[in-house]
Amino acid sequence: MKKLNKFILISSFTLFLICPLFIPISKAQEWVYDGVDTENIPNHSVYPSEWYVFAQTLLDPEILSVGEISHGNITDIGPGPGYCAWGNGLLLNITSGETTSISNKSLISYWNETIGFIGGGSIIPVELDGMVSDRILSNISLSWETSMLSSYIFEHKQRYLNTYSLAFWNETYNSAYIHFNYTNDGILAASNCYLLPFGNLSLYSQPAQLPPVFSFAPEQGLIVNSTTFILDIDIAAADNNNDGVTDTDYLMRHFQGSSWTSWGTPPNQLLWSIGSSAPSGNYTITIEVRNMYGVTQEQIEVQYVPPSDDETPIPGYPTLFIAIAISIAISYLILKNRIKK
Image 1 (cartoon, rainbow, N blue to C red):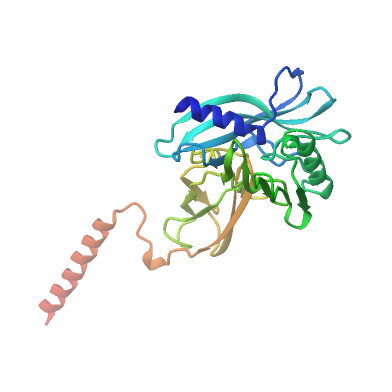
Image 2: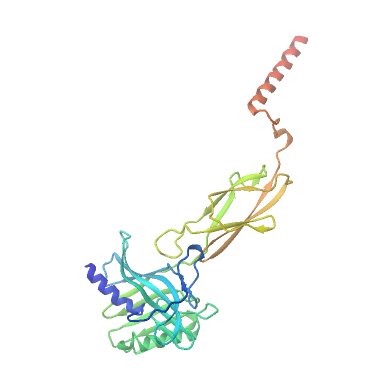
């Protein structure tokens, strides 16, 4: 069964991957996963480490197919140098979470301004402003017609710029169809295909690509009576690149005085001081957290209310000792008053 699943998945990946047989790989700059500092692949909106997951009717219901973005580079695959995205193919068991590799570093997308697009449908290029254009969709449509879809002889085709989508379909030949929808910045949002011998193939999930969500507040609340206090920091659990692992790779900095601190690993708690001689009033605290998808800034305002004189214990004496001394003094005064009477 595993061999059959692997055969079907490799076959179906022709919809999304270019088979890189005998393609010379030139030495060039690479864009790879670099934790929080990961950059998107140029002329594309995808990042190394992202997972695109697909469901296929001919596979075991527990098995999903995964296209993992491995890296990007500028490579000449024959027609000339272009910006390329590469990926790995995986089988994912949704019950056990086990993954099985079925292909490594296959070429997914190639883009050259003059030559155009070569690739499947999961990853597409974008313009320099990061958006999908009619020119991009036209390039993709032409590439499919002259390569992987040429044998299907689709009767109809259509591209819809207002919904950033492409469609191919037949009414008389096996009722085959392909529908791909993208976000305006080139992320596959939905896909549904029916092609023999692959069966039905549809997008199961894709990366969220969200910047961090976090909050912070003083332990004792927004009204503090000390110039030094502890901030509790909470970063919401997330899996923004859809790789099945909760993100932990964040950096944090805060605005202090008139400048920002350096980026560092976020702590669960941060000791904060508004200055030992700070007067009563409101104080703004600004913190930023970032991941590979962006920076999130949050601000809170705390009110500093100094303790009143009657709340301030005599320096150098424990509170219990002071309470005992006061109690003895009061008792003495009462007793003395009684004696006089």
